[in-house]
Amino acid sequence: MSKDFINIKNRKSSHEYEFIDKYVAGIVLKGTEIKSIRNSQVNMSDSHCVFIEDELWVKNLHISEYSNRGYSNHDPKRERKLLLNRQELEKIHGKVKTKGVTIVPLRLFVNDKGKAKVEIAVGKGKKLFDKRESLKEKDNKRDLDRIRKNF
Image 1: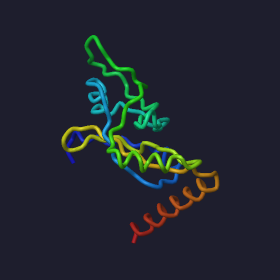
Image 2 (image 1 turned 135 degrees about the horizontal axis):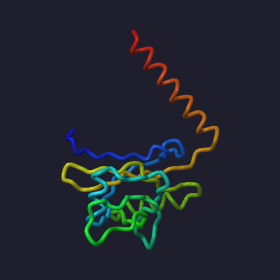
Image 3 (image 1 turned 90 degrees about the vertical axis):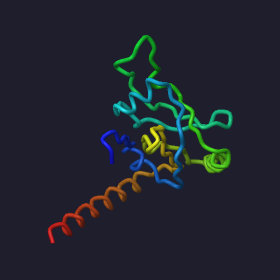
């Protein structure tokens, strides 16, 4: 891992949704946005994806304004287009038509070539009892790991 490895996660998403499929998509950015991403100035907590005229867009992805900007800057909460091939878009669009299924961004990262990518998942919202079960499983796993570490 290099020192400029960027991996920003949406921690709330795994608690709120049960994931069906995961995809990696490119994202269309402006110059100051990629600089802010490299400074880890991103908030993904309320973001979600929607289809607008057969294109996938991410909404409410907050990328803070770049502090060392010149005369122009970007809007922090603007809609950003996601880049996937046509077959993936059609597959995702077919799954989203089902009631209760949505598209959630999981993490934002910069790959080896310096390109910003978004990992998205098609997910179904969890009910309250599902969330409790997930927390119990997580606690049990943590306890088992502690016990194994001590022996």
